[in-house]
Length: 120
Image 1: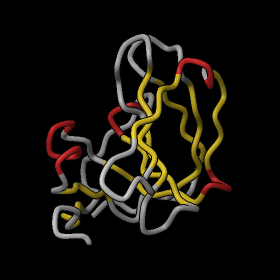
Image 2: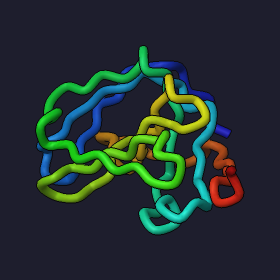
Image 3: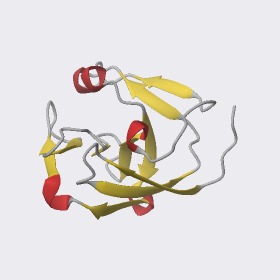
């Protein structure tokens, strides 16, 4: 396992209309088996809202909610990429799609499968 210290990472959607930054040490990455996560196949890191900053593109974001309508999934209106979402169980946290981070390699970070499909 790769030990990382907390630092700032920047990321974006594919077209660059949405840009954001996070601070994390990547304790783990997660996948989820809910219907939307299975389809988008994202690999996520959880960060507290105080460690997330939307740098640009608030107007380019579309929001999607389903099931309990608690989790808030964000997509770029221009290119359709999912960069992050507000979490359902911990709404003061974001789930960040690590594939949207600039120059980030997830190699060596443990991946935990979360169960979303069976959530009530």
